[in-house]
Length: 450
Image 1 (spheres, one colour):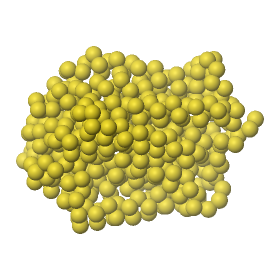
Image 2 (tube, helix red, strand yellow):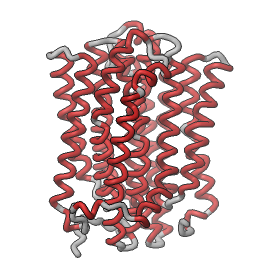
Image 3 (cartoon, helix red, strand yellow):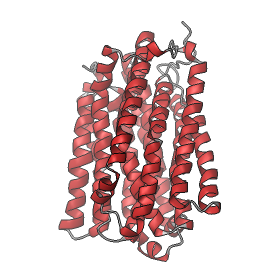
Image 4 (tube, rainbow, N blue to C red):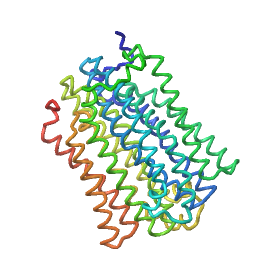
């Protein structure tokens, strides 16, 4: 059987191989960052603080709803990568079919539940009255396109697990360009306000998913998945393996997203200005997410293949390279925030009230840059070694205990209000480093995961 789509990452120079695999991911995630920033920037410039607040709230809700896609697609990617390293073609085929059926079904169920609870959700978040109607428009429109987000994550996980990081970049590039053009058209020229921004997002996601499916279908013989109805049957063994690794990863994603929802509800207790600032905080932190997600994905795939092949020395080199790159970029982004903070904040909005208070974000944003950089190396090892218990520990400690606990301590107990909430959020981001570093020093990552 031909396996031309499968890329062997267990041979060759580690650093150059990491960059060849990571740079398309970096470019893809950079486009994803632009994709996510566009709504906030255009809405902030043409609608104002109320629109920014709505996009911030709706975006956090949407991010929470994707926790299953993020967790299980990451798990599927690792499973596929390890199957590639062990040359198990049948396992790859079964994992693909199981992922498609399970995740797309979940996306439809979650979208229906969220729509039924839409009024309650905005109430739970203490949505400011000034942005409530906008937030409803954004949330409802985006949940209608939830299936596209899940679908794109499935296809990207399949390709990246096989060592192909270039095609997902092409797919997200299509979505990013289309979203930007449609955002300007719908918001600026057609006056569709926040609904237009959400509609542009959904259309971009839909086109990206369809393009990715067409690509995968045309190359189906390369990896043994024929796209016939029977191939989408959930395989018991593959499903159990997906659940074992995916549940902790999904809980981790959900925990962090849930903590951000809690913080957003606390921030909304103040006024629409701080709700808009929360949107800027989250969107700027997408930049650090570009570092973390790109090199975590590349590092996890490379570590997974090399661990399966018993190449422990290469795994150490992979982790060191991931950490070095992440820290270098964190320093660069920090210099930008220190030298030109006003320019960064003005890119989002000309609103004078928002800009006057924006300085409160600078230190938490910088800390998050470095937290994201260190998370990349930690998760490359943990995810690549297929350790669900460690992912669950990080989910609970980082996502719930530390993030919400530190935010409450600094915001309420210490009286730092919104600044305290954002500081607690950023400081909690270093917990994966503590747990991952301990796991590395223990040497247990060399053992076969059970």
